[in-house]
Image 1 (tube, rainbow, N blue to C red):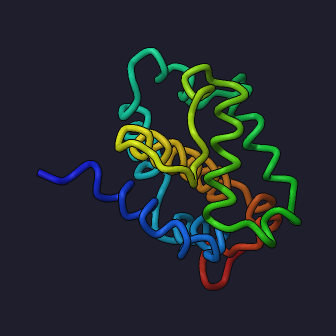
Image 2 (tube, rainbow, N blue to C red):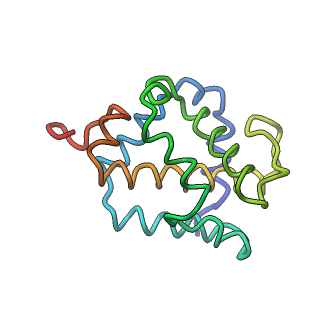
Length: 155
């Protein structure tokens, strides 16, 4: 049985190291190494990490204000040119605070977090990363704005 705390703890324990990691490289890896079926399964796994009353707010839909806010990144090449993994995590938490009641009182991602807060924030980061990667996988225009390639030869 795997330790559900390992990935969140590794993420937050290495916060200072990931401050310099390019976020677009993370998205590019997802786009190159995954497929839509895997991303959808991983998305559902991340949603399932939250309490039942929050899961509907995190379900991806065209009418979700939360995901519409994240989708604004699909038009911002300046953000992508400089964004780090921690920038993305902080941005996603900010969006969640604005649109999902569950996250209103959450501490900042770089604060001293409880294990539950670490798990929830990491699941949120993963969920949003999967959302971005799924869209980038499907739309060449998004990949061009982000500045990534789907494969060695194709944008």
